[in-house]
Image (cartoon, rainbow, N blue to C red; front, side, top):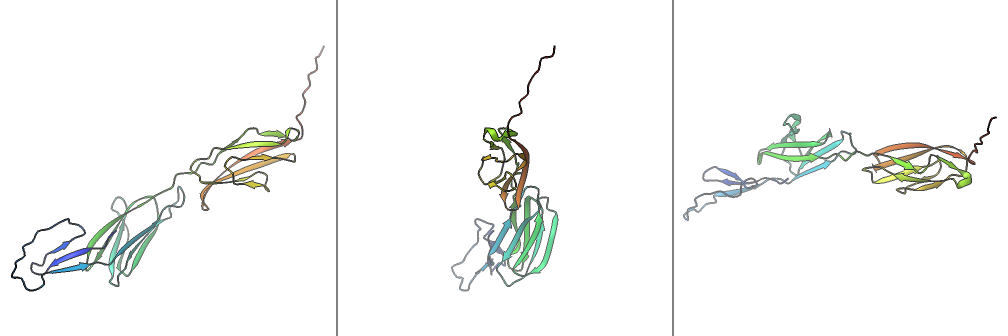
Length: 219
């Protein structure tokens, strides 16, 4: 967003907002001896936003700052132009929080710039799907006790594996060697940030040796 730039014609009383128009026409006489135009430069405007932290959340935030000691009125509207918040005689800054993804309009009014509207779009990250497969669900210590895991997660940027409540890994698709029999819960945390994590778990059975099955022929 930009600050307003108002060119006031002191002869006609007409003001031109140079931020909104590309050109305008006027007549200047060469006999003019007093200043005719006065340029008003509005205070600089800053719009900052925090996008939604994780899919499905409603925690986007927008902050409007006008670097001026003069107060202004502000109206916050959603994509349908419905007013969701407003304040009068604001000094320096105003903000709105707990927003969903979408388009928002920030309408401000002050004595110098009049009415001004800025548009802000808040974004939502893609939904994480945490998923993995293993080359076997039951592994035998006599065969080495090694299981290979294939990460099938979607829209995640970092991964943390827990194989047995003790050992972990940050690899994308690790393998792990079990040394003791038991039933272990393998957990994969797939994340976009510290506050945006999805989890998938799967049980792995570890046995000592395969159980032999014998057939006896009855007569």
